[in-house]
Amino acid sequence: MDKGNRTTMEFIFISFSNVPELQYLLFTSFLCIYSISVAAHMFIIVVYNLSSNLHTPMYFFLANFSFLEECYISTITPNMLKNLLSNHKTITFYGCAVQMYCFLLLGSTECYLLAAMAYDRYNAICHPLLYNVIMSRNACLKLIVYSWLIGLMVAIIQTSLTFSLPFCGPNKINHFYCDILPIMALACSDTQFNEIVTFLIVLLLIVGAFLLTIVSYTQIIWTIIKHHSAAGMKKAFSTCTSHLIVVTIFYGSGSIMYLRPKSTYGTDMDKFISLMYTVIAPLINPFIYSLRNNDVKYAVRKMIHNIKIG
Image 1: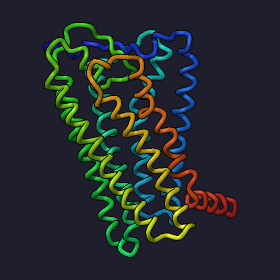
Image 2 (image 1 turned 135 degrees about the vertical axis):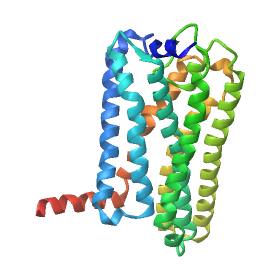
Image 3 (image 1 turned 120 degrees about the horizontal axis):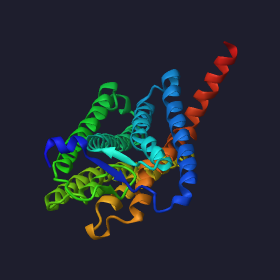
């Protein structure tokens, strides 16, 4: 396919067209989820910036995580909502490439940002006396930058490989956004090399980040058991459990999607699995991580009190 053809080519999303009677219900449900997710993440960012008592490494990472999630969910959900109400569920070749690039950039960055957040909790609990030295402002910024650089490399490599394939046959994407596997399935050439590269990247990305996270939490749990009081253990376990729920949903659904045999691709189950880490996880993350946190609740009460006095 030459470049001229690529500029005029369009892909058609099948999305959830196999259940036409549920289009309006799905639209309403996803719109509510998207609105709540955006509002919750924006709320966390605002509270962090306005509350001096939250200017610690933990909440610095959480504010960056919320910004990342805000961008991440906005890469996919608005277009999905449009397609649910439209009979013209199309996207241009380059529009599809941009969506995939943004999704991979943000999703890959989130993988290692979650690992960085686990590392922060590890130092807070296992090395409390050295915590402020280890997790200095400069160290936190470096971890954020490294996470974005990993995401950038993954997005460039994977998007370039996928959209360098020739597309000369069917143009219907059996998905609700431009993901790697559904796009690769439309190529009219051998995709074995791309499949191997995708598998290796996902293996290093998700499994690598997950192992780093598990190592951090294993050390945390061991330290809690050895040294902490009953009250301290309860608080620490509560924090760790919240984080582990988030990483299990994100890493688990991603692993199921990308690390299973090729013969199982292309089913409606793929869409459900994808919804877990593109729509559901961004909804529950702010409530698990921050909105049930006592420090955040105190910061909110303080802000409300200051507003009333003012």
